Picture 1 (spheres, rainbow, N blue to C red):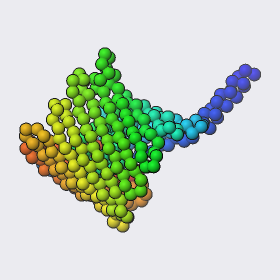
Picture 2 (cartoon, rainbow, N blue to C red; picture 1 turned 180 degrees about the horizontal axis):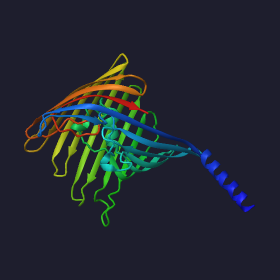
Picture 3 (cartoon, rainbow, N blue to C red; picture 1 turned 180 degrees about the vertical axis):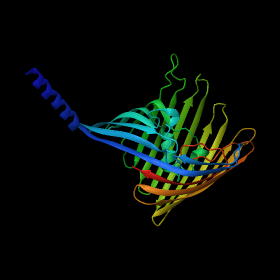
Picture 4 (cartoon, rainbow, N blue to C red; picture 1 turned 45 degrees about the vertical axis):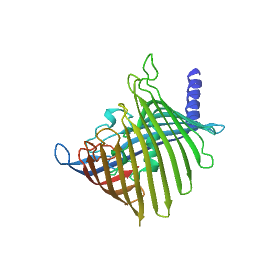
Length: 330
């Protein structure tokens, strides 16, 4: 009799868990393309690359309704290289994202490995290439993307205004400033206009110096044309400051879309290094989930600057890059 009671209780528990779990979704991106690079120190390079426009990935996300306007959720996202099958992000199991979240009327709090507010502003507002292809703004702008051991709070949106703050624990005994990350953004998004002011700072391993990046980015839509602009002031660990400026556009052309951008990077060192990137691209949808793409980017380095044309997942080796490939979203 006891076995039957325990079985009934177990079935009831499983049923309750199944009902409480609102949704679990498996999703991903499969992206592969031909990448031609010119101007590298070791010579020209041709390869089939993964994650040219968007990093190839497989992810799991879920959301549970807790009642009273509260919900719990999670994201576990693995990056992989479709050309070889190897794991991305240095072999991390969930190297793209891994976090748990509680959200409600007062906003959302999440903990784990997450995208920094500065990166989200660059990707979602500033860059017409959405930090992908040969036009990736991170070829010249601040290249970091994620913060480990982080806590993030995103406010509700009110009349188009919202804020996003993040703290990344350095997890070093005796000094909480060592390896610490602090970031945030304030944004306005209403109708055709989007504006965001973002900042990110990271202390070094000794807490004796830090990098610092502050960016103002904007986007404006008029029918099928979207204009993009951004300006960033930066400081590296040696205290050298630099400036990045971006102008870009995306234009609907039938079912497809043309992309173009120009980026100017200047530093204030004694050498006055300077790099300029110009890029164009075209996306042609074959369906809602699949598109063909092509892109071309070129960087001119001056006075010892050494930037390369990369893609969404590759930093690149040359000063000229050409992409041609296919991307499927599932």
